[in-house]
Image (cartoon, rainbow, N blue to C red):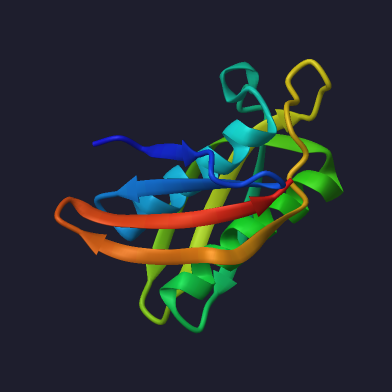
Length: 137
């Protein structure tokens, strides 16, 4: 199963679809897709970790909040992330850790300003779940 893919139907946004057998894997792969836009994740070592706890009204809202929080943590703390560990508990409660290193121009690619609601969705698939995510760049 592929982790994520990008689509070229937007000009000022980046649209991707992430996949996972579980919600946890879906959230991790969506975060990987997001940061593969922002930086060369293959050059980002796991020197720092940031713990994130969130609660969402529903699973889509939780994914939106998760990706938005990762963007905020990246900007506020000048970090690039490349690895993620996500646990989702009852009541749409997320417990996660993002791993990465200090942001560096040599690793950077595109600045993602925000996650948007355009085409944002989570769907059940034969293999688990898929999420469609649009990023304002």
